[in-house]
Length: 421
Ligand code: GDP
Ligand code: IMO
Ligand code: MG
Image 1 (cartoon, protein in one colour):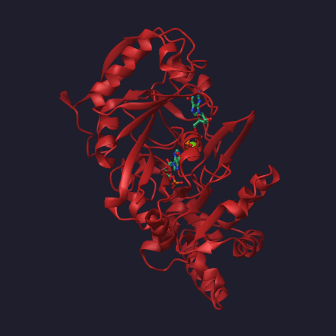
Image 2 (image 1 turned 90 degrees about the horizontal axis):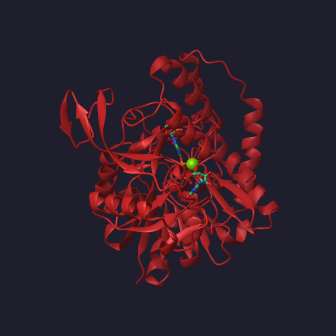
Image 3 (image 1 turned 30 degrees about the horizontal axis):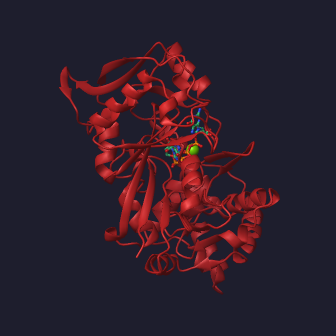
């Protein structure tokens, strides 16, 4: 009996999950997304090509992998169709490698409008949502009025769609939000016809039967632990469970079947949107991280906020998901730095703590440990032996602090720029 292994982002998203899932996918017959939706943007580089995936799992480029969009995902048919067509144009037989769970909830055009209207109404306290309709769709799911992928096959689907749409229109009017729905609706129904031709499955039977039949599954997280609906910096979070246990819920797999939990982190931090970010840099170093790390949203193009690595937040994320293997990304971005800093504690109201504060508005001052930079390009290293000694010392410190081994070191965006330890 094989297990479910999980890949998770441990920070505020964009850690490099797409790259790592694509790399690991070679060893798994099944790759499954379990939550989130097109708010995600997962970049994959290989053979000189680059792709950005939104809802489709990052195993799609591997010949022998079957990719499942799981129950916990919220699916926008329009984005999904665009994504499928782009990958197909690159020669990938999408419909042969992709399954969609019937229990995944659908993002309606009015969910997107509601997202925009609700953000606008929040004014200064806005979340910085990607405005893809994620919050309103999960709201409808939890309040038991959502529509699911399997519903598109039922006779009264249009009736149910109209009822939900009309409820949304009333809310939009209440929020005094002007909109034009006609064109979006046409594209949405075209995309529904496209979706009908994809293999729609009972995801939870598919996953469990495969585990029983000795086919291992790799679950692909989206967003990051600090954006989790329960444990992130609420309310500046997304609307789904981004931590390890979310994979069980989102794929219908029991906790006892979980094997490895891969936790991915960048050697520094980034965040898009609003909310606390204790180690944020507003100086030339912050700008250097943004430029050298090309820290601009894969979905929205927004510049990402940047700062030093935060071990208080990282330890918290490791704890929440029971991470068994760490993966460090993008240390190459700091190749030229004289000094590399890591926050090992916080000062809140003058008191030192190692705990992430409850209050997202708490004034947090990071306590830093400094390391000499390695001043040597990492990007061509093919094995651990080729890594500079200062970098190895830095890695050893992180492992000791976090209490979990770093199993993979990524030294560039390409598939090949990956060192297994
Ligand atoms: P995801 O959402 O977690 O999949 O991450 P994104 O794709 O949004 O952002 C990660 C970015 O970093 C992408 O542009 C990747 O191509 C790039 N990337 C991934 N790993 C590395 C690395 O080790 N070094 C560098 N320089 N870039 C990387
Ligand atoms: P990947 O999978 C980075 C952030 C948004 C915003 C908050 C809520 O690529 O790592 P939402 O659209 O979910 O209502 O936005 O969460 N956010 C992400 N930030 N990477 C992501 O996904 C994100 N998905 C959502 O910027 O602050
Ligand atoms: Mg991303």
